[in-house]
Image 1 (cartoon, helix red, strand yellow):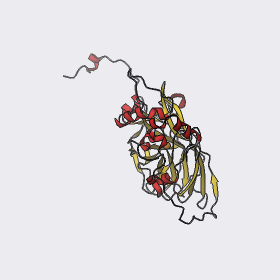
Image 2 (cartoon, helix red, strand yellow; image 1 turned 90 degrees about the vertical axis):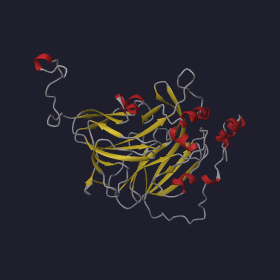
Image 3 (cartoon, helix red, strand yellow; image 1 turned 180 degrees about the vertical axis):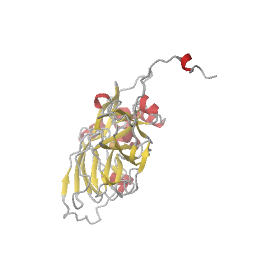
Image 4 (cartoon, helix red, strand yellow; image 1 turned 135 degrees about the horizontal axis):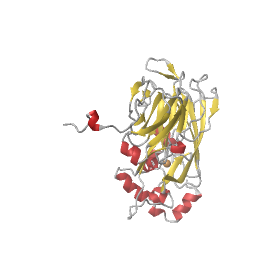
Length: 382
Ligand SMILES: [Cu+2]
């Protein structure tokens, strides 16, 4: 069923945009209506309001009781986003942000998501949760046209950090993902996180960093193109996408979204959990001047964390988690350690840490100063 807007678009020349007219095909829709409904009437419900990354909604690290139904509402919004100064993306977003918000539940909880496809949108969308079981991660039960909503409930059976993303079928899948439609869910063990020896660990802060590769087309003068709407952007974007060379690799939707005035903040002695997702492409987070004390590189909490990592690997289509206690004050850069992607393409964040410098860990014994090369015998080596 097409909405009024989609129908109007159709009348305006749908043949040039065949993907708009393409109703969901059979393989993307699943009929589960014959199965008896699950009885969850005895479960308590709680509702969390999603917040904009890098922030994360308030949550308990240790589950307060029995498994519950955790309700979320999410709205799909197609909108133009400035991904660098003067560079625009016709974006598709979960809840208006790139990445979509981080959801937090506990193992055994039920996630109940109401998904709205805003009537102003052009396209069909859905959601595939890597944390869920069956029906393409929920993708084949959640395909919504503009103006439609749907409710999906799934049981969070595996603890860890997991990507969710839009996957509406065929070439729409990569396009929607590189247009911004991904986020992550963190399923915590009911008794919280454990270190490598099984001892409980807590975090003082959690930051959610979603990394994206964008493929913004250029015109004949080499300037980035700007498009009227998401439909108009498709053919040129597809061409750039298929070259597999991103124009931008960024954290949280924009070059500089987590640097300078937008930097993350923490205090010396605080344990910070960094959840990092990349729905499409491999990456390798690194905290310059720090480490990963405990790293769930593949993001799955049933596996013991690795210790003392310098750089960790996030496979495309996954989310990982790294816990670090900040020991020194200062400005730390958190980067994708492909340094071309970090510095030239955008994948850098800053963490400003307040506290007192510890000279035992590092001391500047002499500040840089000129020396007499001849006198000290440090001229060119023979
Ligand atoms: Cu989509």
